[in-house]
Length: 125
Image 1: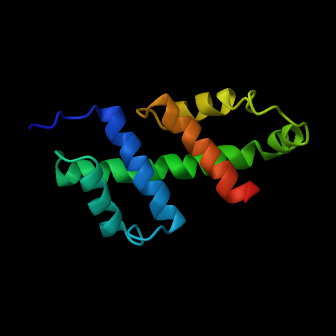
Image 2 (image 1 turned 45 degrees about the vertical axis):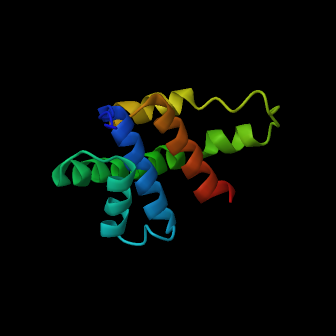
């Protein structure tokens, strides 16, 4: 049984998941070598340089998401005061577009995941 090579965007999505767990201090992701090993398990078939580059790019996305949320915090806090129905999530599209221009190459869902994770982990938790 052969495994198909995943797309670059999917690979970067997996790298972001590893970077997210690394920043959160999950067990098995305590340091960079362990996080890279986990990324290799999740997305096999790439070179060592590609894993390191993807992980570095994913860490960049995480820090960019932190900056974007921090810059938009007054506006976001104003919308937090207005309760939303669960079927109508907050509109993060302008922030996603800003983040996408700063850190291109990821899946659209990865940008939403980055913003929601940073928003929750650093400001709502």
